[in-house]
Structure formats: structure tokens, C-alpha cells
Amino acid sequence: MKKSMKGTIAIAAGIALLLGGGGSLAYWQGSASTTSATIQTGELNVALTSGATWQVKRGSTTTDITSTLASYKMVPGDQIIYTVPFQTKANGTNLTATGAVSWGGFASVPAHLTSSVAGTYNSAAIAGSSFTVAGGTANGQLVFTLTWPFGANATNDTAAATMNQSWNLGATTVTVTQNANGATTP
Image 1: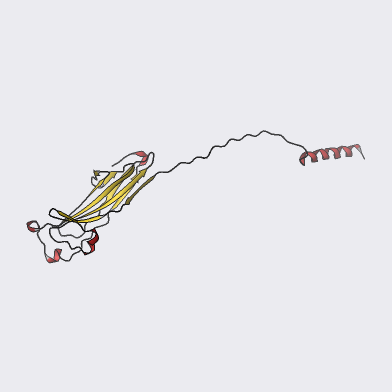
Image 2 (image 1 turned 90 degrees about the vertical axis):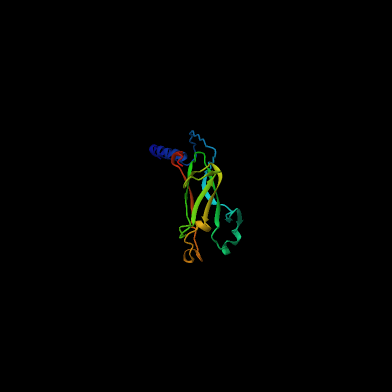
């Protein structure tokens, strides 16, 4: 065999050993890992709570009619009071929010009957239709009143205007909305 052929076979065998794993390659490597971490989100919501009541006030006497509302018949001299409790939850490190009440009212009542809406939130009166949402859990209530005067104050109590009528209370919505950039706007 020629020398050049022997040399070619020797080179090929050396390459085969290196590529075939017969040799070893060395290199450096390092790694680092973060530990796992959890971040918790907050919450903002509003819900009606149990305990809504219907009451009738006549003179100095107030009677709960919640369980008999379907059969109760209002007459001149009655004041009907509907109270609905609600609760907000506002939990977040930088959370500020505003509450708004879209008041419903009694529809189609004669002019001499008066209706009013009022509310409290976090032990303070709701001024108009907005309030600043308290952090954590806070309670409020919506109060709807329909007053039917008796006697000299009651004019136009005709059968057509007031007897055998139904006066519906419109839906009321309480909404809580996060403020941008942590700003508070009542």
C-alpha cells in the first residue's frame, strides 16, 4: 500500500474517532433560576344582601309587611318604606373606586302622593347618586318611600286616580367603578 493511502486512512480513522464519541469535548456552562413567586389580585364588587324589608308607617306605628306584601292594599294615610341592603368589597393595594346609584322610582302615582329615595353607605348618607367606595367590606342601604297623605292634604283622591291601582317601583342599580391612577372622585 502506498504511503499516501496509509496516511489518508490514518486521518480518516482519527476523524471517525473524534466524531464518533471516542474522544471528549470540554466546555464550561453555568445557570441560575429564580424561585417561584405568586402575586394576588384584588377585587371590586357590589351585591345586594339579604334582609330587604317592606314596612308601612301609619301615624306613629310602623309594621313590617314583607311577608304579606302581595296581599297588602295601601290606603290614604299610609307611608310605605322599602329598604334594600347592599355590600361592597374593594380590596387592592392601590385601589380607589366610586359608587353610583341609578335610582328607580314609583311610576304613575297621582301628583298628591310623594315618593322619595335615599340611601346610606358606610354609615354616611349618600349625597345624590354617588359615593366613594370604602376599602375592604362596607355596607349600605337603599330606602324608597311612598307617602299617601290623609285628610285635608289629600286632594284629588278620586276612584279613577287612586282606587284599585298598581304603582310599580322602577329598578335601581348600584355600580362600583375603579378610578384611574388611584384618583378618588366622589
